[in-house]
Length: 286
Length: 325
Image 1: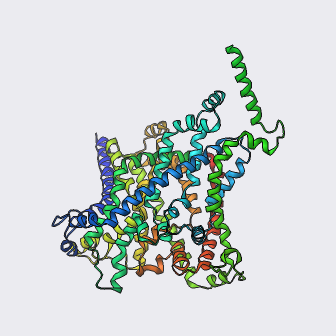
Image 2: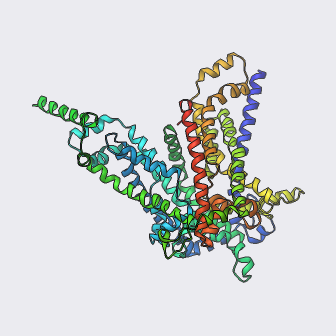
């Protein structure tokens, strides 16, 4: 009996530790959420912790009233959709032919692609390349330079390779050419992998900040991340230079952060499931 | 009739099989192009992408060895006898950003690497499936946030007037300079890494744990070992290959540092420790338009990264038989 009791106590203490970890994960969000719903006075007096004080939604009214913010959100969604469409197409067009062992030059092409995972020009040559191609300050600067991840391509390729050969052979005997086999046999069988790769690309495009900072200076083309960066950091930059600038209040900053987080939270149930399967496919064969 | 068709089919299949064996007969290049025309056509776009956006910048690396002039372009600018490299190797700031990169990555290795292992061991011991599932889902969440958002959250949470410091002062303590003192900032940087990645990092370990043979646990029961004994003698050895491979891969990336994380977490007060190679290249190369210096620092980093990565990959392939890759 004492052993069972001891085990029970251990079980509950372990669960308690995990519960603390979960709380540490969530507490920052609760804090930001309650800040965004509190009055500025309460925030400045440091009374706000994980529940709102002087509940109000003024900050959200300002954020949603800022057409620039909504525009950035909408623009980034469109950008991400276009990016996913292009990136997925290019990735398939690369992964499928490279599964064919009979293809001459296959190993050479694979080597050429894999090498770019180990060595790259670096930030400045990349920047000058985009500049030379006249892509600076266009949405294409955020689409074309990243339109295929060699790593995701390899993941998709190993998924294709695990499909049974016999199906493709049967289609070939029925007179299908390689394109028809790809469209009618391989892609319909690969829907889970394609969904995973699409979401990986979508989250990358949604969260990635560096290229927008480097390549975009035109405010109309700011992605949501760049826009948020400016809202969050504007007070620190401007405080020294110009006292008269209307500084965003803490509540406003918090509301902006929530504004940028909610789209990810809405998509989270799907993201989580497919990302976990993505990491598993990727680890089977790198 | 059907027999003829079947024979035709099998003949066609046979033909294709022989084609697949290149040793049988030497064929001309045009033959392969013609046979796999569609496949080559598909590859055109990805290959063009790789050339245009991956290899073209490599051609641009030469500006590290040149006095780069925007109007003359990379090709026509004059060579400068390694003047750029002499300049960066004699600048203290260069050594500082290299040191910071190594220190922050090293800290991620010491603190950030074991965290998911410990968390996975904890989660694996939970007996309530529902509770386990829900906690995992929540613990994965920070992985999906952008560094801009995490930077914003951190600034609000850890500032001298943020929640943590309010709680500390409420309890009668002194506010801690999480973001304003450079030594404290380094610890903050490492903790943010743990917060963002510990949950997500458990996935591979938990998968490895489910692969451990149940009989080993039963045998351990018979031998009378307790829970800790089972963790130490069964679970940990079971996930050892995963640990080793992931450790080697992370060691291979010790010189590589992304841009978004340090850039969004650093601030002007902690630049002595917070400025790393990527953010330095951005400030010098793009903000000050000193392209040659930026390219040279980047090349230095790329070459060292390449050496580390090739070595670590070589080692992990040597261990490949009991690894996960």
